[in-house]
Each structure stands twice: as structure tokens, then as C-alpha cells.
Length: 270
Image (tube, rainbow, N blue to C red; front, side, top):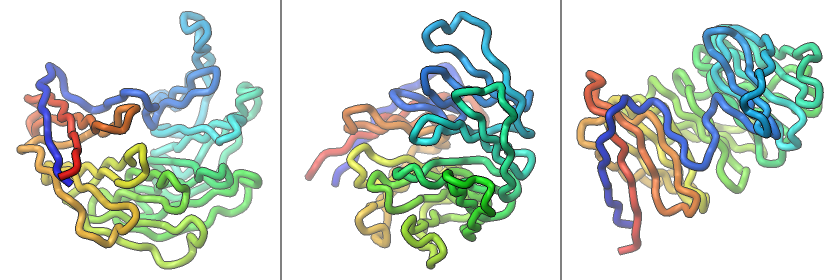
């Protein structure tokens, strides 16, 4: 596989990048749910009338990530400066918010593709908490992963959860069918903090902030040495795919914050 990079210089420091997908702190039903980190709230915006005042829902401390259950009935909010997940009832968001205890500093959350479980990356515990959506008050299953997990995503076939361990040089892979079993570890670059899947499900793109690279993992055979793409001294802070799956857009900036750049990573067969 031959990869090409196109570099676009921007006039900003690129901390987030969205093309056709939602950011981790933004979730959609008919309304948009926005996690407000510094005010310990979630704003609910009516997408049919966005100029209307937002509903403000108090949640836990430092909400950093939010996602919806697949049936659209609940919003799960990861509260990064305590040890909880807040669950908002979408049909009645003003109802009391349910609170679930997880590990320390939950910073990322995703759902299994069958809608049965929420996987929560706990940064300071080096764990992932697995919440049963049908019975969220059940004690979550705890899975040990690498150091300071900061991002988590599912493979498109729903079989595996990929966890970026930010102070290690690896990705942890959890078998969704057997999460209590051995966790596979894949070596990537230094300080992996971002992970996303290609839309055909074949590859995982991992942004390594300290060594300014992207590691590309073969999902069908993750034990293969990942392909490494050098970003020429710029640190990746956001990755997203175009809807047709042909391009990865990588938001970067220099260590001193002086250079905002978007790389467009293309791929073609030899």
C-alpha cells in the first residue's frame, strides 16, 4: 500500500477536526448534546430551532466526552474529574440524572455496535469499565489496559475495542465477545492519543503526538508491524475520515503552537 500526504497550512492551532462525524464531546439525536467541561453541564440544543435557548443539564465534574445509546434513549457522559458516568434520559432530560461509578478520570466512552455495552476509558486507573446498558446499576466489568488510556473506539465489525494508551507506546485491543480474556497489545508511536477506523473497517489510524507520526494498524491482522506515516515534525491532534473513505484528514500543530496544519492522507494500491 502506498500512502501520500497533502499538507494544508491553516491559521489556527488545530485541536479538533470534524468532517462528517461527531466529536467526542458532541452527540446527536433530534437534539445536539454538548458536554461543557468547565461548567459541569450538558447543553441540549434543538437542531430544528438552534436559535432557541438550550436546556442545561447538570452532570458530574468535568464532562469530557458524550455518546448516545444505539436506541437513542440515553446520553452517557464521561465526567473526567471525578469517577462517574452521568446518564441522561433523552425522552425526559429534566428527570434526575443517573450516576454510575467507574474508574478514575473517565475521559472517553464508546458503545458496542450491538448496543449492549458502554466502554469507558479511565485515564488515571489504566482501565476500561464496561457498563451493561440494560442494567447500568450493575457493577461494571473492569479491564486492565496500558498506561493512561485516553481514546477508545470499536472496530466496524463490532468485535474489538481499540484503546489508545497515551503514556505508553501501545494500543490495547479488547475482545468484545470475551472482555475478561487476554488483552492484546500493539506497539505504535510515542504518546498515542487519537484513534479512528477507516470506513471500510480495514485499518485503524493512530495519532502519536510526541513522535509526530500516524501508525496504521491492519485490523484483520493487528500483530503485523503498523505502517508509520511521518508528519514532518508536526503533532497530530485530530483525525477524521471523508465519507467516501478515500482520505484521512489529520489536524496538527507544532510543539510551540506556531503552525496549524491539516494533512490529507491518501492511499492507493501499488
